[in-house]
Image (cartoon, rainbow, N blue to C red; front, top):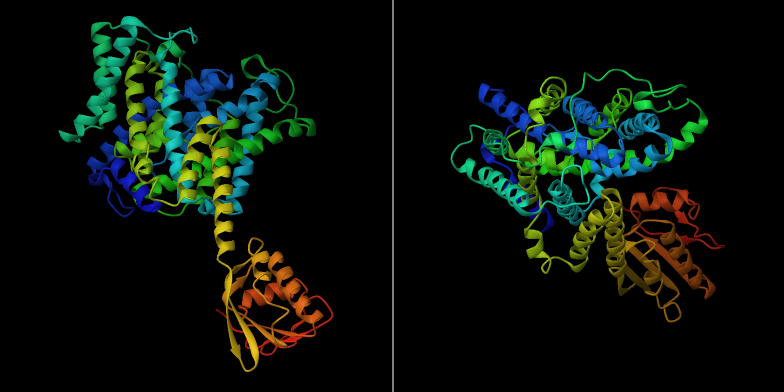
Amino acid sequence: MARALLASFANRIERPDLRLSPNDDLTPSRIKTELLSGLTVALALVPEAVAFAFVAGVHPLVGLYAAFMVGLITAVIGGRPGMISGATGALAVVMVALVAEHGVEYLFATVVLMGILQIFAGVMHWGKFIRLVPHPVMLGFVNGLAIVIFLAQMTQFKEPGNPDAWLSGASLYMMLGLVALTMLIIWGLPKLTSFIPAPLAGIGVVAGLVIAFGIDVPTVGDMASIKGSLPSFHNPFGTGEGLYGTALAPFTLETLWIILPYAVILAAIGLIESLLTLNLVGEMTGQRGGASQECIAQGTSNVITGFFGGMGGCAMIGQSMINVRSGGRTRIAGIAAALFLLLFIVVASSWIEMIPLAALVGVMFMVVIGTFAWNSLKILRRVPRTDAFVILLVTAVTVAEDLAVAVVVGVIVSALAYAWNAAARIHAVTREEDGAKVYDVEGPLFFGSSDGFIELFDVKNDPDLVVIEFARSRVVDQSALQAIEAVAAKYEALGKKVQLRHLSRDCHDLLTKAGHLMVDSDDDPDYEVAVDYSVKTGILGGH
């Protein structure tokens, strides 16, 4: 049910006419679509990067450089064409305390270490563990991020230069009207033509109206100047003064102990957000794999960004959705977005600063509408209660805390729910066989079901020979071994014998490695169950 819902969500956002398989040719029409999609994404990246730089307490160019370098490198070598990466709010909120206490140079050093840790995770193939994230957690993830993206746009409705005052009167109505016009264009234009991405058309039309008629509304330039030069190599380690008047980070163990906790947290958050976005984009474009490659790409981009004065970053679900919605399916769109962003910084800052924030807010509002899995609200009463609870829980924690915490909480709750349900499945069917009583155990035997397993046996009233049949069960962990030992000990105390039968090869190996069994022969092993007794098994099968 959850997989079908996620597929339905993907189909709503995806435009089927713009599907592109890896073997399709790059026609002029396709290249045009990719370039225009990249331009749209670049325009949306500007206010986001500036805003996240403010959140982290660093210069706007630190966020813009990060968006350019992380976006470019991951577009070239990342695990999923179509994904967009850059400076993100999830990382920015972690950086605040570090920058406030030690300065921006320590942030650059942390970003380098963060990247090294991410590369290590990719080399170790730890990205595959993203498969353990259940679909209810994915649904909560997209819903929570949709709400976070929506709430992030609320800051654009405040007076320029006065974050404590909201727009009011004519200024507010004009802002809302331009936002609505942008959304209307994005909604209606695809019904008429696909020649130009609808979000780009919405930005262009609204910006043209504001400039032509001199409408007084907040613009990108009201946030900060984005004018800058090409990023240059900068080593954050050393002594003396670094960028923006702050001290460099000494290359010492003391510095390592300062930046290590932040680097670990940032690396984990960055990889979780990137890998979940990778899965989401994969569902939409029909692609699979690439998790380890994405880890290496994210790590490489952050190492380089740290040495070029950027604040680091990870995958951005909002911009990724804009890219996919605008038709971006190849690496060209991501590369174009990064290069357009650099062009804005170096030569076109005066033009970009004239773009009204209302147009960009309208684009992001449409992203929110397309990202939120609305059908998840309808199925909450139809899916298992645990899944419904996980969806709501992950959504709430994503909004209240951050993505990494939400995903970890969701996975833990889902795992506990699975363990509880699996524990309840342990039971046994009994029968008589040549004077022996056979317990045909069904269900996994692990820590959650070990007590229930022990309670299955009527030790006092059973005959002298008892056979425990594991053909429909599986011994999973140490708790299971202890449970088998406890049952055997009870029978041994009454002078009765126990036979273990049809253990799978991996279960048999688990018992052997734990030292609870001594195997004389693969065909006819003797199982010694920890205490001073041994029982003869029947057939050792593999199931």
